[in-house]
Each structure stands twice: as C-alpha cells, then as structure tokens.
Length: 591
Ligand code: ISL
Image (cartoon, rainbow, N blue to C red; front, side, top):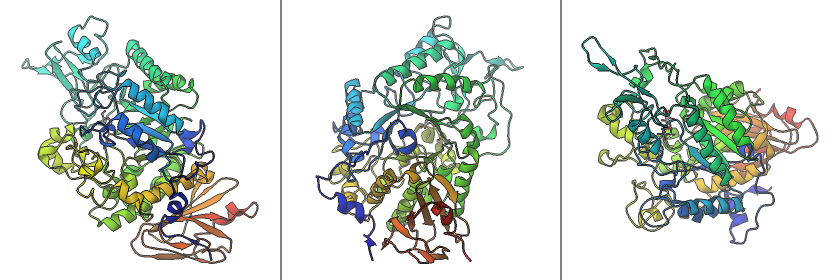
C-alpha cells in the first residue's frame, strides 16, 4: 500500500537538493488576486541587511528566494503586502505617513524599492503597498501648510473646525467623536487656532476627502506607484475616508469596553460617498492589467464587506480573525462568508495580521509548543483551503506566538496611551506582541540582527526559527510549504465551490471544494481526541495531505474515517467520470 510519508516529508524529499527544478507554470497570471497566496511583511521586523536592528528592503530582497524561488523548497507565495514603507515619524510605525512618494530611509531607498519590484517580479511575486489615505502624519507637508495658512492651497485639506462655547464660555470640541486609540477625536491646534479631527492619534490627522484637490493628490500618488510597477494596494481603514459633511455627534450606546465602542459610528465612517470614490480609484487600478486592491474594513459590521467588494477588489471582513479554536466557530464563519458573498463573490481568508494576536496564541492559548504547532498546522490547512484569497502574516509559517513585552519596552502608541487601565480591560492592546522580528536561524537575536533589534525577539528563537524548521519535514514551515504548493496544482482549492459536509462529529469541520473536474474534501479535527465517523462511500480517495502520517489510499473502498488529534486531512476524489462531485456529498454522512 502506498503511504504518504510522515508529516510534510513529501515536500522535503522532493525538494531536498539545491537543484530542484522550477515548477512549470508556477506563477499565476492576472488572476493572482484570486488564485494566489498573499504574504504580509511588516518591514521593520522581517530582515535586517545593514545590521541596525531594523528590517529593511534590501533585507527583504535577500529573502525573496525563501518566499518563492519557483521550487517547492520555498514557501511559494504569490504576492507580498508590505506594511507602510514611507517616511514616517513613527507615531504609528509607518501608519502615519509624512511623504507618500518616498521610502523611509530606515527601510531603504527608491532604488532599493525598484530592485525589490524587479527581483520579485522575476520570481513571479507581486508587490502590494499599504496605502494609508484616511490620514497623514502631522509631519506631512500638507498638514504643516494647512495649519499655517488656512486660506492657502492646503487650508481645506484636513477636517478643521472651530470649537463651540458652553454656557460658561468654555471651549468645547466640535462634536462627541472619539478616537479609536483613546480620547477625543479632536485636538486643538495652537498654530491655526482650531480643532482638527483624527480617527487615530493626534499625530494622524484625517484628511478631508470631500476636497477634490485631496482626492486628486491621492490618485496621482497611487498612479505614481502603479507606474513604478506596484501590483496592488491594501487600503488602510478605507471605510473611514468619508465623514458626514456636517460632522454631527454620534449617537451614544451604553455597551462597549472602550469609549470608542460606546458610540454608534453613524457619522464618522461607512458613508455612502465612499462608493463613488471606490469606483474612481478602482477604475484607475483596473486601467493597469493585473492589479488589485484589498480594503481594510475598519471596525464595521463584517457583512458590509461583500457590498464593497468587486472582482480584483477584495475586502477584509475580520470574521475569521476573531474565531477561537472550535469547529463550530469556523464552520459558522465560513457559512457566513458563503451567505454574505454568495457563490459569485470572493472573500479573503486572514487569521492574523499586524494588529491582531498571532494565530497560534489566539487559537491555542497557553499551549505547550507541540500543541501550539499542531494547532498552527491545522490552522494552516484552514487558511489555505477555505474559499477566498489567503493572506498570511509573516512568521505564521513557523508557528510564531505572541511575544510578551514588558511595560517599559512597549512601543505601540495606543498601548502606551491606554495605560494600565486600558491594558487591564483590553489585554490585547499592545500590538508589539505580534510584530517581533523574524528569527531566521543561528546567531545573535535569532539571526535577525547582530545588534539589539528594535523590538524584542521571541524568547524561543533558539528553538523556533526558519533554519531549524527548514531542515525538519514535520514542522509548521514544512506544512505551509507543502500546502501552498499543493494548492497551486489544485484549482478546486483555489477557485472551487465551498460546501460544508454535514453530520460530522462535534469537533470536526469537513468541507468540499469542487470544480467541474475535481473534488477535494478537507476535514479538520479541532479536538485533542481522535474521532471517527462513517463514510458512506465506496469510492476511491487519495490522501493529498495530512498533518499526520497516513496511507495515501486509505479510503479506497473503506467506510470509516478516523481523524487523529488535531489532524487536518485533505482528500481528493479519484475522478472516474462525471458525478463524483455529487457522490462526495455522502462522505461525512453518518448512518
Ligand atoms: O479593529 C481593530 C482591532 O480590533 C484594529 O486593528 C483596526 O483594524 C485598526 O486599528 C485599523 O488599522 C489600521 O489603521 C491604523 C493602524 O494603526 C493599523 O496598524 C492599521 O492596520 C491606523 O492607520
């Protein structure tokens, strides 16, 4: 009986030599936004080439082969989304942009960026930029001009308002809006003698999207990056661009942990004018073949995502990113995706990002390393086989966990700002924990940098790093590599329909991904105990992948499927003519 080799060994064996041939047709065409896998790089934490303790673009270039060298020895991702790389005073670590047209000198130069694009493209990797257009840095020239000269060309580029006076003559803010990062959304500016509005930090003033000059400047900027060869954009908090023209106070609500949550954000985001802007912005992007966008739906009802999505233009809805580790939660989130997006719509699959806990920490809190890795590997199967474009956050491929940061070392502004009370109420408010530098291997600081990195390394870098996992076919890294390359050769896993298979044990989520030519079943046991269920089928199946060791044709003619502890299994129906897709529906039906 043929056997699939132990955990990930298939990939390792096939690709052990340095001479592994590139996989034919490894790169997708213009449909990469849908078929491909996107990898998010937090530039400061990825790879440090000049030994200053901060990751940079030349460092990323050196790691492109790790990301995709065209062979199964590499991770095999199709695109990189770079968190912001523009000059920034760093109050929100790049999400406060001081110059949209340049590169932050700490990360490199425009030449480095051009080299990155060229070298990535040579490997079939697309480059996506993170456009932060809801606000700029208060150090941006536009804001400096705007505060200095209200009547000048930039005077109306931000949301400036006079205060009001209460009956005692005290100056009051223009309305009750709160900042997402705590405190009021209005800050008094001594220079201009007015308040300005900021959804985030006072150092991140919101621009006035109703001003055609702002809109034109943003479009010109985006065009500049498209002309430079950028393949796509992530649009930071895009649903907050437009505010109600009259800036009325938001209605209060009485539930919610933070002041921001205790308002109904009727007037400071999700305004109808967004759609008109999106149409214009998307038309620009679409005029360049093969380009795409993904909008970050900020603090909104996730069911809005499909309404704002379009072919080539995705929207993060954040439903999966908040799930706990149980079959029901993931089943329901996937059901909601299907319901909201419908068969023609296209969701994103993201289990983590630079604002959220590491997935292993969220899904396997307080777990020992083996359990953490088992969950990380099963989660990898979910993120790479559920229907939608997968977005992987750097470090997830080695099963990284959140890194505890002592109070005195906290860098993340809202965490600092929130102080002890907020930290107690919202324990996950320090995003530094998920941004620690990538451990590449031996050497000081996990091989990231010979000098002290800008942020603490994980305490386990000697046991959890790329070099160690690279050599071991049973690791989280081997799992990701194997899955990504498997996905590449199975259209059903990329664009196939999704159907949940019923009557599975409580801890199991099983679903089918199918095209007219291919039917694949994924079954994930979220539980720690092995579980079995009857499979009413005599058809031939092959095991495409398992996080456990198992025979490749185990189900041929069999009728009992047993999943091991936290096992994730991918099966392919041996197609023997039409009808197999229909027959598969029986796989998980118990008698
Ligand atoms: O909703 C959230 C957490 O519950 C946030 O993570 C939310 O997505 C976020 O605050 C908005 O994020 C984006 O804009 C911010 C920046 O700090 C984040 O890093 C960025 O992803 C301001 O630009």
